[in-house]
Length: 275
Image 1 (tube, helix red, strand yellow):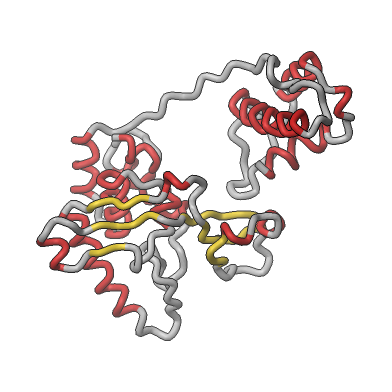
Image 2 (cartoon, one colour):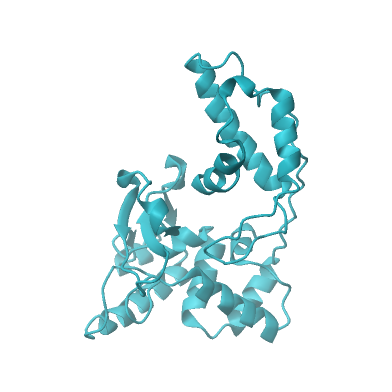
């Protein structure tokens, strides 16, 4: 939301007086956005399209509608200019997914243990990428007793996210659980552990025996690595050889490589939780 405000709202309509906003003004603003070059994402260093797309404009519309609703409540405006404004139609691209047999085949041929575990957690537990990256060993029961009694579980109560350092200062401190040290002083972004966006995102997920045993094996391996001098233990399941969070690009590149090697239909990591 801060990105929408800083990139498309403040520079374009930030100085307009409230009394000058009306339905016609908002519709003209949305049409102007369609001809406005999209701002490059600092995380990926690229934009989804050349110009601001209808999907982004709809997000801006929802944000402004909420802001103007508050302004009406405070009696700063008589009515919400977004309420009746027409928004450019947005037809989201249908996400391609693998059928179950393709997922099983990918798991069979995948030799990367970390990527294989990610596949299982996406597929069997319907995790989001940030939830997978933020999963910690203290938020699960994978004891042999729990596995044998079919009550092994993981508890999702946080997520990993990469944010700009300047945005981090504007975030509510109570939402940020931990800020990881940067690998380079010149980096403009930082990885954080934060609470989920909604209370409904917090949940307990019971594990299939296969997945629980994979976690047990990984934990044993990590406990051996912790003995090394260069390992920093952040209690993360998805950790690098130095203990730091595994980046989303690492998993995405692993999936892309697997797709190319075995001529699989192109999908993204998020697709696996929808199979």
